[in-house]
Length: 359
Ligand SMILES: *Cc1c(COP(=O)(O)O)cnc(C)c1O
Image 1 (tube, rainbow, N blue to C red):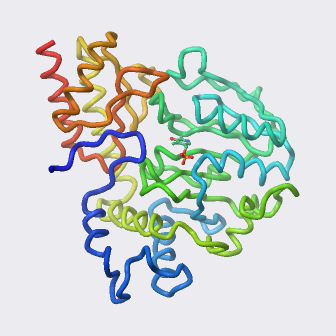
Image 2: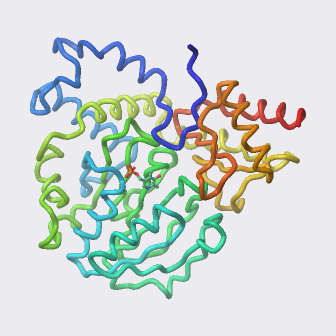
């Protein structure tokens, strides 16, 4: 069977060249005589893999020396707890912008250990926009300020970062890490589950400024303390070895394309193909405010549930799969992460035009 165009929100498409190389190396990695999956995480060849992964990521994101890079388990959802368990040692309160289900979960988890203050919300309109921020509502004493940089479910993103002064900005970048250029210096912590835009499920990336490490609450479990992992080079216990190996190859793939800047250019071009069509279509409509549109997740509807269902079914039969929208938004959602080729988006738009002409 041919490979399909997979628009899944996550786990999602990976670059074909990475999958092919993983297949080639499946039984025998280099001259080790074994699969990376079978390798001791304490072995020399594996140490070389994780070191190379970190070095490539540092290069791609231009990560400054005073930031640690951690490869952890537990998903972005564990970070909802890990961030407050570590940063509430600096004062048990934090500010949150409620831009969707993930942001809300991050705030709810933080509220188990301290005060989670919601400074703005777009819940009133199914999170179809990024709310205006009034910095007079920010707490200058907060131990951190949390945003979901890209809202996977609703298809919005922060195009501008909040002005948080000296409060560490913490960003959940699970669905847009490495999709656009960011200045890491603007953040205290960046975290991202790998399975949307970076690799397979199982590894969660944390980029953390060094001065934020070492003040965890007494109740913080050893495994949830950033210090545990930063003191041990992400090797306190067994890291998600195979997932990190795939991430390393994804980083190499981005580097070969010209780095994050080149990736961002491609992503803008790709997203515009779809948004331009949505703007001119008489049948399909985008669901979010134009200024807040995500480059990665594009929700759209026809306004007629039966027609939506028909579209999803016919698209799937043509090899455009996982287009069903999240249950809270309905309709469709095309996730067009880094690994989705421009031809995939063009082919989808051609199919949508055809569907519109016949219905
Ligand atoms: C998917 C997602 C999560 C949850 O990630 P897990 O790795 O499944 O815990 C959190 N935040 C955002 C923005 C996501 O897209």
